[in-house]
Image (cartoon, rainbow, N blue to C red):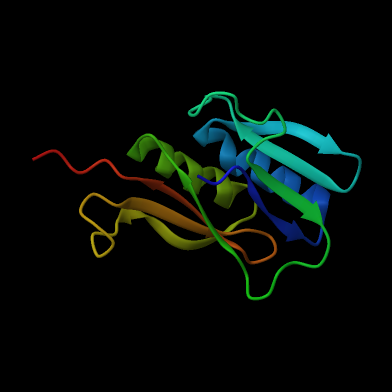
Amino acid sequence: MIDHTGVTVSDLARSSAFYEAALAPLGYAIRHRVKDVAIGFGAERDLHGGADPGGDFWIGKGEPQHPHVHIAFRASSHAEVIAFHAAAIAAGGIDHGAPGYRNHYHTGYYAAFVLDPDGHNIEAVCHIPPAS
């Protein structure tokens, strides 16, 4: 199981504002700041017990990775995926795939994709299959 991950960003303040808005519908908030160098985000709901109080997703000031990174955040409903996409676009993200099913991954794969301010591909995904 992955404990935490993150990306390097060119403008920490701009990316912080983007991620704070985009991840809020998924229950994420800023959990920790390391001066003007890094920011940790974590879900309000602790899914695994004993979660790191610093968060499981970090952004750090520096040269963004190339090629860009793809990170998928789990959503608990289709409504959360839709809200993530709308919030991310409103916060300056670029649409990279509107909310919808991607059944070529598996039945019920419902996701949305947005490029963050540095071009990283950020996704929200819900794995609940459609009602039969």
